[in-house]
Image (cartoon, rainbow, N blue to C red; front, side, top):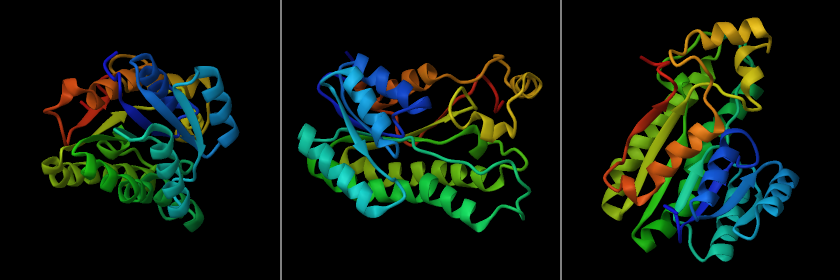
Amino acid sequence: MRLAGKCAIVTGGASGFGLGIVDKFLAEGARVMIADINGDGAAALAAERGDAAHAQQVDVGHAASVSAMAEAAIEAFGQVDILINNAGVTHLPTPLDEVSEEDFDRVFNVNMKSVYLTARALVPHMKANGSGAILNVASTAGVSPRPNLNWYNASKGWMITATKAMAVELAPKGIRVNAINPVAGETPLLKSFMGEDTPEVRAKFISTIPIGRFSTPEDMGNAACYLCSDEASMVTGVAMEVDGGRCI
């Protein structure tokens, strides 16, 4: 029960890595808002997980939607102790000069602007409480870019830098900010990262991961739990690679 008494928001919490974080946080005693653009999916999941789980439909790239999410969480829980910026998208593997402006804007809004919007909506609340933990789910792509995932790579590199900038500014306010860098895993984005999902493509991808497997939602939940718990009270500004050695 390392998160007993804590209240958390997990964006993109209805599937993939976000769901792994939601389930770990619930198991460790937190109350959790499952915030997802798939409002029906979030609601169904919250109903399955019990009274400690709340659902909220949100488009993390739009200010009014993020503000509504923050207000709903504070109303439901009374406070927000932990914010997980997990929602993310990618464009299909494409030469950098052929990515459409529409795809670029979507990656920018969901992966980058969302961090600004959630901070604007929730950091004042955390400052007033004198404490808080923010975790940004970045990617190994922001550390070791792969060809043809160009602007996705850049968005995750931005998120890592934003994490460090937020951490150094907010530390005196009692707010810690960290990131985790997963390698690809069994999530709805896997096929988009690989371009096509075949046994051959999977084998080639896994061959680049020394531990020999993809990241799992459980891996992300475990790492997120540590970084957002009081056990990590001296840890801020870290971008922890949870990647089986991919970036070595």
